[in-house]
Length: 240
Image (cartoon, rainbow, N blue to C red):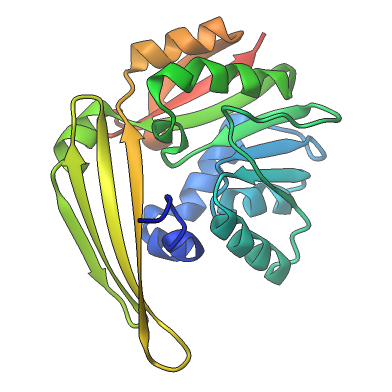
């Protein structure tokens, strides 16, 4: 069983194309409200859609992810679109980046659900260390309701032209464990099987807010794209 995104990392952006990337990126750009030239970091950048979106509107960007496969695809897409962003392999719970600090940070689409509760405070402290005073930090989490009632103990599948995946979830008291099997077709027409495992942890709004305060952030919350908080909560933070 491979690590998270070892198999689907190269397909992540394609598999999530129905999430409304364009609207989502414009929401983030509006909330960050960074001037042209302000340096940003995309923590858990995946295949780099939001990294590219900020770069195109005039912000030098660095994308960070724990998945080498994710970053490989991010670099391919950036090159194809003329985006000269920097991509680094790294884990926010251990992250250290030398040099000038960043003007803002984003981290969206469940990145912090992958961090165990006991490591959450450390992750926020590391984020604070690489940001300038007054920097905006926006991230989201999938809610307890979503993990327990939408994802937990559920089965998902998709049968595409060049791939098929089966995604089975098991709910525990503090997390959802996800097992994904991907069958992908090669140039020779044959399919290759790959298996990987994900774990997403349940975080409450109160526990996240407390950890942010301890790390030196003030924060407010709202739902996805400023709407309902039922399945996703956005934390809009500023470093003190």
